[in-house]
Length: 121
Image 1 (cartoon, rainbow, N blue to C red):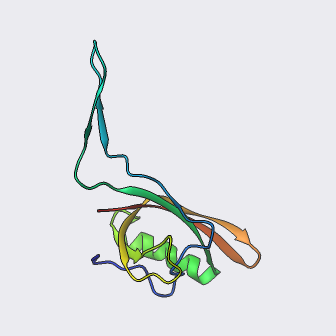
Image 2 (tube, rainbow, N blue to C red):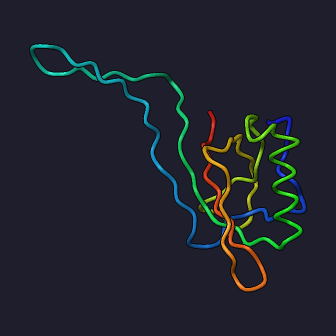
């Protein structure tokens, strides 16, 4: 699907309980001076937001930063990541891109890294 894949050395799934998925916003609202607004579908396919947390070591954090900076051109390019959500062992792949840079927080000797992504159609 994607030409760039999520590195194998990084965690492949979000922590249980950290996965959040939003509904696609695929509606255009037209307002008028008089009368009710009209709504229409924007397109036949829509992106939807996904957030989740992964635990990473110091080395994995460095690898993630290099992946984003060098391979994804500071996060501008989409990439393939294992399907997340309802499955413990992903079988498919999503085409995603970052909506904001990852954030990290110290958790013992490791890092709790939060990813904000949008899944592309």
